[in-house]
Image 1 (tube, rainbow, N blue to C red):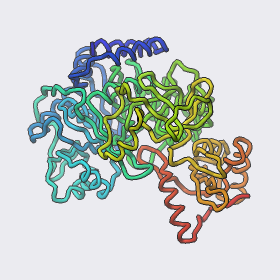
Image 2 (image 1 turned 90 degrees about the vertical axis):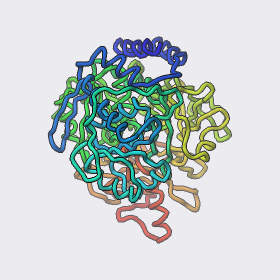
Image 3 (image 1 turned 180 degrees about the vertical axis):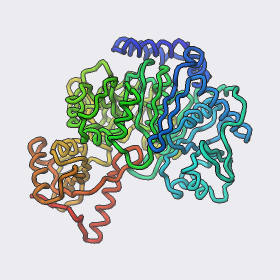
Image 4 (image 1 turned 30 degrees about the vertical axis):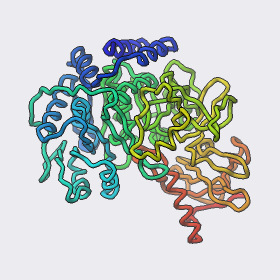
Length: 564
């Protein structure tokens, strides 16, 4: 039954999903027997290695060194078996947490496969973490082993201190570290059960300290059917996802989604700040057909001279991480004829809501819920909202429990906050239009209350981006004795523009033509860059903290303008 489900999904994706196939797929998933399920054994090996073993599973390019490598499904399986045997040789077993902190590299995929196959707990870890941030994670979940690259090995050693665990390098040599490819090419899989824990993520901490999110042998491996169906990735695709390895979006779109359908993953490694022009040139030269990137990257791409790119093979483009502004979607579509489709999910879930390939796209909307998630909007008292355009909390019914939903947090207090009255509260707010399309408003604690009105930052940020001088924008509420809060915008300017009060007024006037008066920014501050997580999400919590610290000191920004 499990094999039939995944083979049907591959077929549905190839033919093109529609409402009827999506409902049939949902029924198959909900009736599937996943009591004993190992995704590597039951899908990757049993279907893909057997049926398309000599097809490329990975085409890898390092933008820093110009190294390139192509790996087939069979070769990747052999690499993964070697990794698993090395880990087992050092005493690692089912249920042991292994931190995986590497750049985009073929051995990252091999390690991911090995850990799932061996029933160990993968802890994907952002490559830019400091020693203090790693120590915080180790205090919550002690590692049984660590897999890292040479570039990250120093900070790992500093973080471990006197803690002794096996350490493995994917590249280079370092004293006290082991190689990963020394052992046999055959390895027996663990017979993992449905509720066995196989992945733990630490959230990016946009609104507080990182939370540890616990996923099972089915929640991501099977639940990623929702992500793959919203992205629309097919067996014939060369699928690229611009994401750092330490984040859930990498597992969503660089690993499970394309590998569910037997596609070829295109992987581009870069270090440091994204060179948008060079990256887009690689998208073209590597023949990418399906491309997923965060809003941060799309905003950079549309500031380029797009006439220098053809991207003739690129048939599908999607965005996730934060909502994408309509102006960006329009600019891309006008040039290339393809519409960037937005979708929504969390580290705690797979993709929940999206613009499916067969749907009409409404710019600014994140689409409609996948039928594998029963999504509702509720008010502050937990009562379901049925009226269109009324903002509420995005929640998911958990009776029955969606297969893609995480098991819970390591912190029981967080579980009590998030799981209430038969619902899982995502912590985000949205509204629904009269056709059932969802529109993101903001994190629950990002919503601004000004003169008894509630303002979502995303809507204001989208309006700001419609001014020709604005490259990026972030909006928060700042305290005000009369209105409770004022809407403040932090603005990054495009090249060729300089901060001034005249420009701030011009930007405000542009927003006035788009939004209601109470949503207009009363303060605009020009900044060189916005604080973000490595996955590209704006850290509004950091902007709010900066404001609070300034207020205590009686300071203001160098290019901060209070507007009438």
